[in-house]
Image (cartoon, rainbow, N blue to C red; front, top):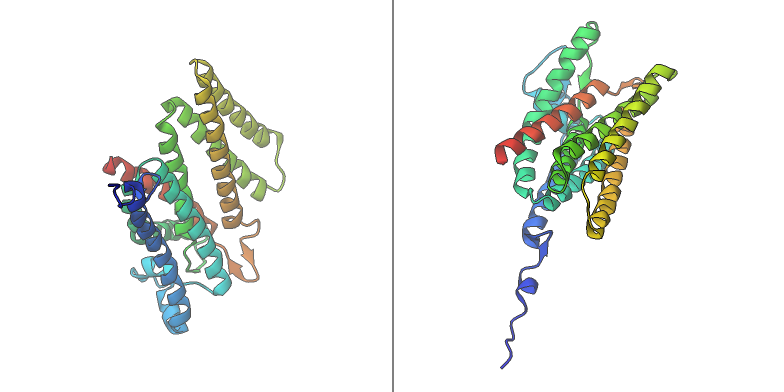
Length: 285
């Protein structure tokens, strides 16, 4: 008599090696954060929004955290929400593909609680040092969004390390950092001089040379080169997403229509998010 039960795979469908129910639960958690941002924006009155914002002149400690969850308007909210959803989802998929689901699950709560405080403190210190007469009011989730950009870069390095040498991953990371720094130079420099442009170009060329030289030292089969091609496409798509992120978070004119885009907080979010992700990876592993 045939067994009427469906195959085990059909009974417990999996996504990148993990139970589908667990993956859907994780994505629901990511979506819940977006729902919280929407609820705060549309259900709480403006007076509460104002009390949650971080006023640099008043420095209420609790607002170092709460200011990340309140926005100046719907355009501000949906811009941050779109960046958050896209970057969190891609970072999650990279972590799954690297068999590091627990790393993502342990890092995100820190991004939601610790990272906003660190970003606001860094921004406060930088603005107080460079613009002591200013007293901006900070609000918005963009510092956390930038943090996911740093997390994504670290996650890609972890994923590549499973297949390639430490030196190759180091050169890929250098290429990504130089590419993003070159983009910032293109955005903010009135004119890119030969020295600055040449330094970025030479640095990118050297990193590519380092990657290629590591590949030539070992004889690989056709299957490996197919994997390399897939990884090149994968890294290229991630870099395109990071370039888009930097373009959105670092406008050429940070002051527009009386509104200041806190590029210092965005930079702090990217760097501190990457460092926080790297720290939790070391702890988890």
